[in-house]
Length: 113
Length: 114
Image (cartoon, rainbow over all chains, first blue to last red; front, side, top):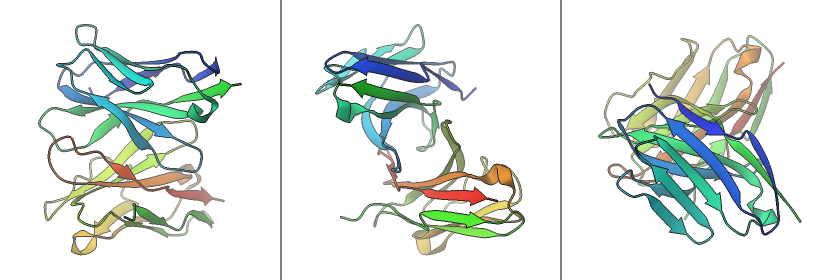
């Protein structure tokens, strides 16, 4: 199975708040989990990524939490800013494969002042 | 340096016509991907090219879709006899080969079938 399930579909957060986006997967062969950020009219851009041997990765205000046993991972955006308003996609790639990734359906985040 | 370039940025055509979408990857990137993004949906994988290897065409939705990559660089996605359900944003990405190399996306071609 290649599906990656993402929730919520949309999210409204006040400036300064924490935005949380969740993803779940079934395929235990996935070994690389990137998150992409997409602004309107633009292509997705890699934001942060994690491997399953790490439970958490932080880059600035963005943190990925990974729960291997539950097959879940999440993106946390701390101190959310209006400039963070975008669509976020989680994704997963199969171990040993080339870089074909399976994407979640996306979360449209709106950060209001 | 220059990123992934896609052209045209927008394309409107009538049902039944053929369309060609172009992708110029980042120089030196041997891997090239095509994705389709429908409104409010995630990215649907279409096809993958890596160097001189046979492409992975497993994501092409029908035989009306085809793609080629000439000289290991520029790629063209062709949709024949377009249908209204083909309306979407078609995204191209490229990457270096091997490891966890990130995919770099172009801004896509927004295709509208009337």
